[in-house]
Structures are given as C-alpha cells and as structure tokens.
Length: 287
Image 1 (cartoon, one colour):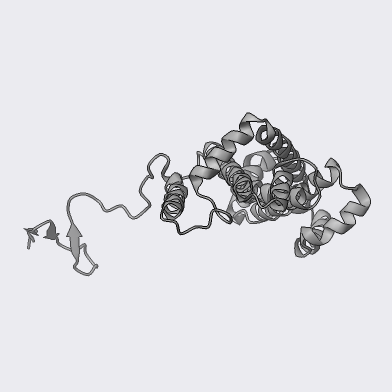
Image 2: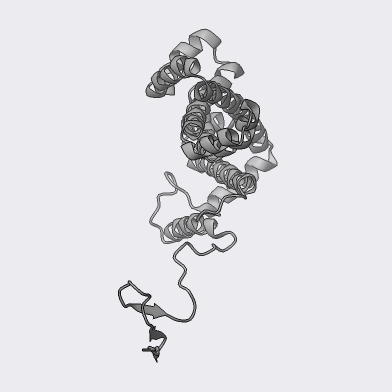
C-alpha cells in the first residue's frame, strides 16, 4: 500500500524507511547548528564598550581625576608624550625587547618540543625538566637572574623568553604526541619514510597545538615585559610608568597600560590571522 505524505505547515509526515520508527521530516531550509560568521571588527566591540562606560563615568564626575582620569585626558597626555618624543622612544625600546624575547622563547620551545615528541630519550630528559620549570614562577627566578646577568638587556630578554618558552613547549609537545593513531597507521601502510612522515603527517598535525601555545606566548611576552620594566629598567614603557608613579601622574600610567593593552590585542589578532592562513585546510567552528 502506498503512503502519501501530507504537509502540515512546513512539516510533512513522511513514510518511515523499512525497519525504522515513523518520524517527522522537516522541509525547507536546513538548520545550521554551528557558529555564524562574525562581523569584521566585532572583537573591538568589547574594548569600545569599556571606553564608553569609562568616559561616561568621568563626565558624570564618578571618578577622582587624581586617581583615574577619563579616556579624553589619557588621549591628551598621549599626544603630549608623542610630541616630546618620550612615548615613541619608550615604545621602540619595549617593542624590541618583546620581539627578541618572543623569538628566542618560541624557537627554543619548538626545538625542545620536537626533541621530546620524537624521541623517547628526549622525552625522558626534557619533559620532566620543563614541568619543573613550569611549576617555578618567573618572579622567583628574577633575583637569581639578576645575580647571573645583571640588570641589562640580556636579563630582560631572558625573562621574556622564559615566559614564552613554557606555553609554546607544552602545546607543541601536546600536538606532536596527540596525533590520531590512525594517521600513523595510514602513513605506515603507504610506506612513507621517516622524513616524509614527519613532514606530511607529524608537523601539520602539531600546528594547531603550536598556534594555541603561540597565542598564549605572545600575550605572555607582554606580561613578562611589564614585570621586568617595572622592577629593573631605565627605559621603556614600564620605566615611564614607574617614574609617573613617583609623581602621582595617573594619566601617564594609564597611557602605558593602554599601550600594553593595544599591543597585546593587535599581536593576538595578527597571530589569529596567521593561524587561519596556515590552517586553512581545517574545517572548524573558528574558521
């Protein structure tokens, strides 16, 4: 006997396949369950909202100008610092330290992760040592590093590199050792050499983990830089903020914080762009 489906609105009662329970089949457009594409610049909405609330509170007289000035006053102070060259010089110094420490820490972390991920001996020697370092905060190492390196540029770059090293190593190592066993069996069945296996299977499979660690490392480089430039420095954004603290210049302190935040936001956005380009072959919610 032939069953005829009867439409009820946008839902039709359709005949169930043989052996299956009867059910409802929805007609029309398929419902999408994933994330919808975001609008360009949507990630700026949160910071802009904070600025609007901050400025509104300043105009309403809810903030003490001696302790926390409004964004308009911070912008005027930034213009004055740019005009006399102090802000540009401080940014150039801090940016150089952050980039050098980020490069040293990233390269070191990737090399150690590859050695530990591809070799049992490397895993035994490196992973435990890095886990011990992970448990020791960088602030606890600063007195010892000052004894070894002094308070020059080498000390600052090493502290930044240590803040970058651990997240890069942990996530890259996790990506290398967490590759699905089926891909390894497929490479063996295809007769790939060790070099082909590393180039075609292992490294592409570890890239997602590396970029997770690299995003954490980029922000970590600025966090470590704030620490070293506030404690022991004679130049840079942190030094400018420390000098402003002595004279209760909250507007200059806020300029430094805004600069740190802007560089952190911009660097994270750049890493996200590189990640999307390098991992364009992946189909994920984020892509």
